[in-house]
Image 1 (cartoon, rainbow, N blue to C red):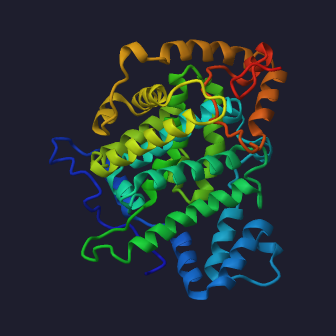
Image 2 (image 1 turned 90 degrees about the vertical axis):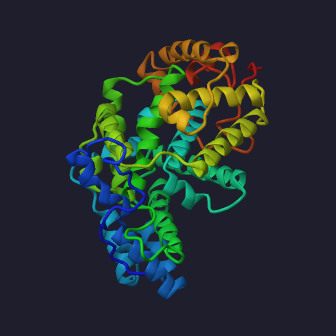
Length: 405
């Protein structure tokens, strides 16, 4: 493979807007080639790792943890170029912001963050048929989805922790590794990619889809259960995740203008305008996400809802975060009215959020608890109880969902 991929003419991955009676906007037309554009820095590193083997891998690992200047020997050229890029902090980044972490996400009870944000983000990723086909190259979707839910959960917790994105810290390393995993998938897919088709699997817009999943889509899902954020919190959220975008190698023209949910919705609309509708692979993957999360949560310690009730709850969350039209295309059914827990959950969560952010001290206590590393048997999705962290403390309820002794 060649290391320096350039944008190509859009392939079948891009919807034919004129064929479906829509006039392509200038912005959408300019974005389309990014669907088939690779990540030159990351792609070159993958090629170098294949060429030089363990030595290059060791240099990369050491460089991510110690920094380029901390290496005893100069690493291979592509590794050095990637390290230089991720270590060059954009001028707009506030160092204090990185030390504090993603304070908005940390203010959300861990159980709800996992159940809403991570589930919705993964379903949003699979809504792209080309991405779903590449990530689900197996006839056993459930194990694949289970692994992705676990990996995404670990990555995002490391990313939002105070100091997690500082050079050499777990979130920083995990984010760059996520970028390289996409490059590896791209390189692997090219071995049987139709050479007569222009473009590449997993382009830059696929990474933008992932990024939107953990910002806009995640917070739509959280809002559905009564966990809303203020306009100021929106700005903090996108300022933090703009640095995540930098580490992931996203184009600044895509993410830098996005400073709030309104900007994210505009980017999402452009992305959806040029992305084909979900196919059977997307629907299979989404069903596996729902089933896997419902099963895992219902069997976790302290769970208070059945697997069927959780499945209905998750389907309702996805319909609200993705939109009814997109949910219909993904085959997500509507929850029966008699079992719809969303109104009750929303009311209770809004009350809990009020007390959780009632004072700076309570808000800080909630963030500290959310930032704690989960111990054995205390995965954040362990219980389904619509109460915030600080409200649980005030009412004598443990995170497990059982009354405190």
